Structures are given as C-alpha cells and as structure tokens.
Length: 519
Image (cartoon, rainbow, N blue to C red; front, top):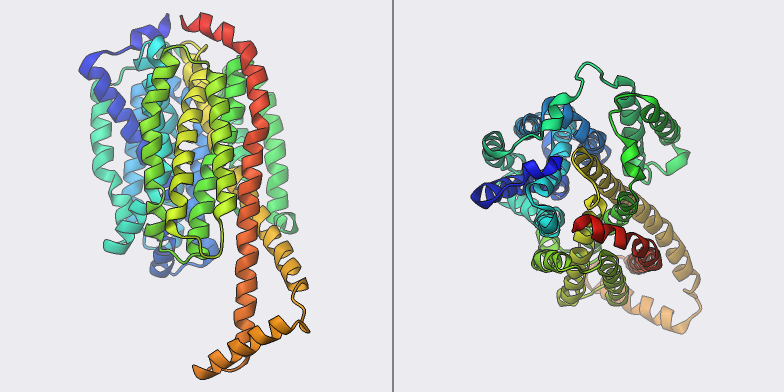
C-alpha cells in the first residue's frame, strides 16, 4: 500500500512524532495565548475594544481558510517542503507580530501567522498517522491528541504569566526558537509521499480557492463578530452571511465539476469519515465552548486574574494527557470506537451537569477541581476514537484530505460554539434580570429592611443613600449572569447527551467493515 512506505521505526519515528507535536502545539497555543494579553495590547497600541478583538479573529480566519487546502498544497509542493515552509511563515510572522507598532500591522501579521499555522495542525496529524503502521494508529492519534487537547489549556496561563512578568510581545517571540528547531528537523527527517510529486502544478483551481476563502472567511467573521454587532441588525453581518451561503454553494459546485479540485469532496463518500467529521464539529463545540465559558465566569463573576483562570485547567489537561495512551491501548486491543465515544459523551454531559449544580456568585476554587478532571477524562475518550474512526478506512492521499476535513470541522465547531454560547448567554442574562426585578416588591418589608441596612452601612462610610440601590442593581445583574452560565452548562450537556443514540446506531453498522479494514 502507498502509505506503508512512510512508516518509520525507532529513533527516527520518535523525532518525527516530537517535531509534529511541537508544530501542532505552536499552532493551538497561539489560538488562545493572546486572549489574556488583549488589554495590554490595547493600551500599548492605542486600540479600541472592537479593534483588539480582531487580533483573535484575523488568526482564526487565516487558519480556517488554509486548513481545507492543506492536502492539496502538500501535493503541489511536496509535503516536507510545504510543512517546512508553513513553519517558517508562522515563525517569521510571530516575530513581526511581536514587533508591531500599530493595531493594523498586528492584525495583518496575525492573519498571515494564521495562514502559516493552519497547515501545521492538519499536516502534523497526517505525518503522525502515516509514520505508524495501521495497527498502531490508535496510539499515534493518542500522541497527537495530547497536543491538540492540552494546547488550548496551556495558552491562557502561559500568556498570563508572560504578560504579567515580561511583556506581551514575548508571547509571540517564544515561537521563534521552537519554530527554527521544528523547521530544521522537518527538512532533515520528514519524508514526502511519492504521490505528491505527480500533481499538475499549473492546473490550479483558483476559482475554487476564491470561493473557499469567501465561504469560510465570511462565516468565521460572522461567528466571531455576530454577537458583538447584534447579528442581523448589522448590515455587514447580513451581507457576509449571504456571501458565506453563496460561497458555500458555489464552492461545492466548483469542486464537484473541476478535474483537479483544491478540496476533494469525494473523500466524504467514506461513511466513517462523514460521521467522524460531524463528531469533530461537536467535539470542537464542547472543547472550545467550555474553554471559553469557564475563564469568563471565573474572571467576570468571581474576580479571578487571567493567570488564576488559566491555571484552573492544568489538572484537567494533565488528566487528558494521562488518558490518551490508555485509550490508544484500548483501541489497539480492539475496543469499539462507538462505545468509547458514547462513554466520552456521557462523561461530558455529567461534567456539564456538575458545572450547572456548583455555579453560584461565590463558588470556591476547590469546587471546580473534580468536574474539570471529569472533563479531562471525557476529552480523552472523545478525541482519539473520533479521529481514529475518521481516518481508519482511508488510504494514501485520502488520509491528508480526511484530516483536513476533521481539522476544519473541529475549528468551525469551536467558532460556532463560542458564537452560539455568547449570544445565548447575553439573551438569557436579560431574561433572568427582568425575571429577578419583577420579583422585587418595593412594599416587601424584608426588601425595605435590607435597603435601609445597606443605606446605613454606606452612610457610615461617607457614601450617599443612592449607593444602596446601585449595589442592589449590581447584585441582581450578577445573579442573572450566574443563572445564564448555569443554563449554558445545562444546554451544552444536553447536546452531548442527545448525540449518544446516534453514535451507537450509526457506528455500530460501520464497525464490522472497520475491523476488517484494520486487520
């Protein structure tokens, strides 16, 4: 078989695996590392809140445009050359991001850093998958999965520490030594599959690339900025939504008729990949959604620092890292993917339900420890079986194409997750606030006594009596926000619970075919 020639052994395989994981980590850590430094950047570069949000958005748009094209680009230039070039682009623009003197410069460099970074994630996965024999692919995905799951978690504490102790440009500068080492190791050890050199370089699907950029670029912008701009009440969001829908339609049409498509949609005729792609979307929704919601709650409601919020995730990430090889071993011994995924979905539901139960306006730090450990277990049980199932019956060039689909869907799942959760929560905060205010009866003696006691207390500190009403309004707003966070946890949990029967039904049918292909 074509991909067997790429199987590596001994120290060579170790070096290739480590290089690929460093690259995957660089790309993912950079997705979240800037979040905690945005305030410092804003002050330094004289940017508005709206402008500084683009530092995150531009990177995500660069990522999501390039991910579906990675397999095709590998075929054009040879995988090793393309991978090394992506590392170099990512590293150069990391340096330029740190050197930016204006917000416009930083946004442009972040977009181009995202273009370099998008390739790192998917190509790393393809390289690791093809470096291991078929029977050890579960373990290969476990090793890759450690990077993917731990990356978003490492970002905030690392970014917080660097911003607090050095300066924000260093969150970009730390990429440089790792990027240089990874590029040198890639050129020395990574091999390109033979089929990549046979692609017709001049037969380039420029129209397909254009439609793809319009489709995913517009979609990513709408998801990132929709809530902030009040969705379809904003003309830009409305226009870009139409662009995204039309871009999607014409992109699919173009890729099905063109002889050398930039994204091979035919690979989705593989049943396992189709299911894996949908599950990757849901995994991204849960992974990025919960990584977004918990730091927001701890910082806005409990008043924690960015570093404290980031460190909260570290035990959960270590749990995932511990779980990965165990799940990899279970898969190698013939455990059925659909059972492991179902258990993972169930565990994630219990994590969300537990979160729903413990949230208060003053939840102690210790209350988060065990729910987040359970989240770590769930992520370990979801990531590897979904990825292994997606790529298990693909051969040769299809492995790269399949990895590109699952990678893109995981990213888009995360973007949809964050957009839907933030919109849902802002609407729910208003509902709960109105509900709580309607229950405050001015004639209630208890309420009158409470306001009177607060007024005396404020007067003793030299503050006007009106401060009591301000404090009451703040208490209502805080309680409404907590109720909205609780709702968000509950609904994310229910989404994962609803998926279980579908996973058991569909994957059960595919599993016999899967076992035959893997042995």
